[in-house]
Length: 594
Image (tube, rainbow, N blue to C red; front, top):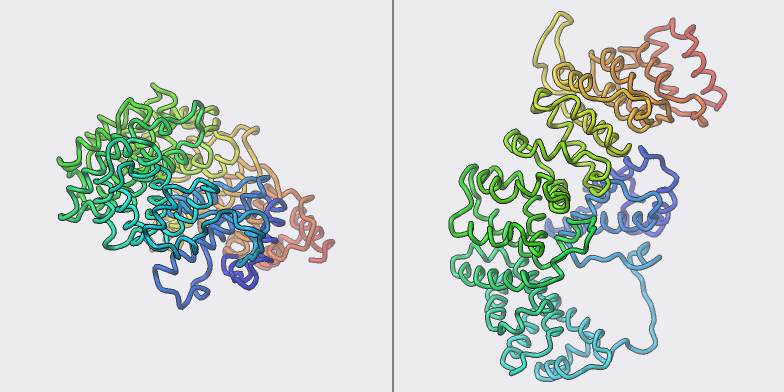
């Protein structure tokens, strides 16, 4: 699906966007998952040929962003967790990207005519002014000021050197100008940071008096500047100046009430990446990553006190910084587990419900897990799985559901008490259990086709069968609940796909996962079966899978995958044509013209 030209070519953009919005509500869960995977995979390489590497990445990301934004406007059904996570990633990378309103988003180019400007000063008017005239308009013009400031921001994004010069002139004025001049100017400069501009930006910030710097209208865009030029922190000639302005901005952000979320905040990650404390945290960790620290090296001595201040352990204004740190928990624990234990881990313990909810959301955003980190967070992680807490996790539930599977399969089932894990799976909403089952399928598919690693009485085993028998099968037997009320077609399809991923172990795998089945459409499973060798190698088990998983009444069109499966299975085992189940499916398919 990802290679369909219509989905990505500019010439068919309008038709593709219209089709996406029409198709989205008509798809079942598996169909939306397939479309989500196709969109996040991005356009095919041949469509992007000829672009420079930097331009290629931006162009690919923009095409993905536009299509997710169009689907997001459908609302019912909502975006899948895969699309939500991708949209969040893109918004973090490109915070100024916006989808045009209404039908404009369906077109590559949109042209409108307007009568009368929204402001006396568009960007071309500002360009035409000399620097003194530009400064005078910014300081004294009040009519249609919002339009003027927007044009000023556009000018900063397109001609950063000139806007830097005008802001440097502004520092020489006794009043230093209105704060909104700085706010919009710095916003534009954030979008136009380039080699050589960091030094001038840092010098500009250093010349702003404390009275102005402490205002949120100034400290917020200043924090964004700090994030944008964080690479300057590792340049010896700029490092001292960078960290002085970082500390100054951090002090101002600590007094900015907008860093405190309203009670009942549900999207802590979204809040954190869009406030000044979050910008500073992102800038700090970018600088820290630039140090190329080794495992166990510890937080450098010149940064540890600053990091403690940034975290502000119990201060609500600093919680966004702790959310950003939680998204880097695996890295931080590898570098300095003692610091993590002292500063971050207490917040994951559920002693403070709101703090833990925020930090677990941050962790779920970029969830990574290794045995050492797992030992540190295991208790709080299992306590996360209550219906009320999971409800507030939103799209990050997918990552955490899959981490639970990873912990049991990779780190050993003895690491997790059976009853606690079963309770966790029962607490998951249906879509989250489907995500957990999807991880099992993906895990097995990654092992499929790898080199043979062992032999037994049945002969050589493939890697995927070894993984099934030694890891996945014991885990599912131990923890997956068999409650009839928890069974659902989407989950059943994922578990069936896990069995299909095996090779010689398919009969045993099917015998286990079929105990969790609920009948449904299963068209995704038809495709998986048709792509496998099971119709020839395990014809009877193939028919058992179809019989137990698929509701015959759901088959209302001539499915070519099913016809291929039936023909291949009956050729491998001719006696199947006398089997009642086989005849039922064969006749049903023939009645539909297949």
